[in-house]
Amino acid sequence: MSHPKYEKTLIIIKPDGVQRNLIGEIVSRFERAGLKLVAMKMMTANVEMIKKHYTLDPEWMRLVGEKSIKGLLDKGIEPISRDPMVIAQSVIDRLSVYLTSGPVIPMVLQGGHAVSVVRKIVGTTEPVMSDVGTIRGDYVLDSYPMAMADERCVRNLIHASGTVDEADNEINLWFKNEEIMDYVLVNERVIYGVI
Image: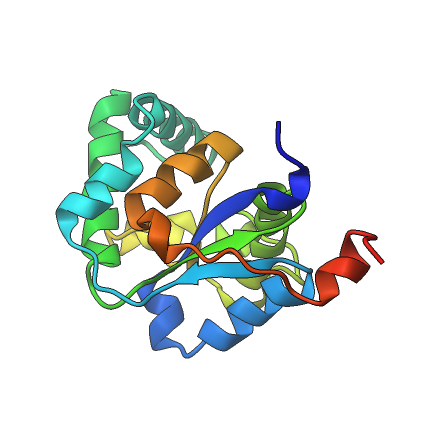
């Protein structure tokens, strides 16, 4: 097992983050926490790439479908179907429209417990439920009920890998090995106690 300071995670600034000129603000939040940017590019994703991204984990569709159905029922909203796969396909279709609507910025961040640190900085998937001080809590007012009323997915600025395994798979999808830089920042001596 490698040292936790080498853990990597994938972040994607979504089209709403790019269009709202929040790229620098988002990146600076991660850098201020001590994470190191080791890969970054701007691109327009196609539908095939988005579908691959969200189906890397074969359980993703079932889990997102079940979670979506439960969330709707908990809010007193009847889902369009009680079949998790139907709901998941609807989610992927909406995500495909959203994430191909403009440029995205995938990036790889490295540092101690990168996956969990990034998830804390980003906030919960539903922005209106995110704490103040998180990126989504500070910059997004969207919610699942608003998105459903508009027949779209939630606009939440960022994708962040959920687990270390998920991060590894997603990084391999979005980046070639030679696109990921290996370098040392001066502040790593301070952060990791190698003075």
